[in-house]
Image 1 (tube, rainbow, N blue to C red):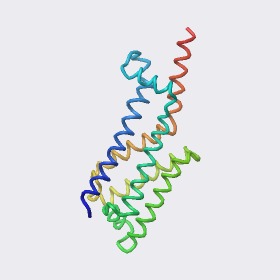
Image 2 (image 1 turned 135 degrees about the vertical axis):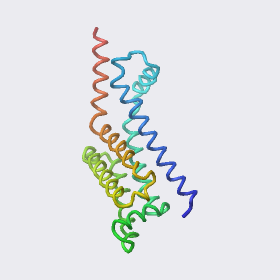
Image 3 (image 1 turned 135 degrees about the horizontal axis):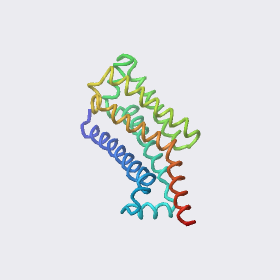
Image 4 (image 1 turned 90 degrees about the vertical axis):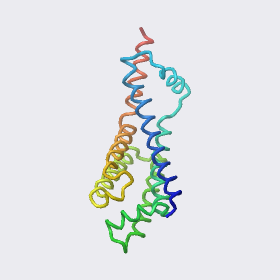
Length: 189
């Protein structure tokens, strides 16, 4: 096991999670909710510039989600750079089947990344992501919590990921619509 490779993968995963969390909550949530109560916020001008440029936060989030699945599928499972993943799978299916099952799971995770980027049935894709992450984390915590990166606290990160996926798929467009309609009402006055 290459500890340097292991650290790089985990750092990248954590960075992607932090970026995703920051983008959704700092920009979109405050953009949709806080604007009504605090009309003069320093980041409001920043957001207006990006909206005027038709900057796609949705695209950026889709890329972040796809990278999470691609990194976990390709590097951690198919290429086995992080053997801990195969050890977790071995506890679930047994040591004999672990290499094949880990590779299969990795290929399916890479497929999830391509599904996210394809934008085919995005709500079904989001529900699939939420269900897979929830089931995987519940099984891992019950069977192999000692092998998890953050132990039993992995479920908290999984919950945040699930919430961000849900918000992106089901609420983000609604929040933007509310913001745009509020601007139209102000312009009419």
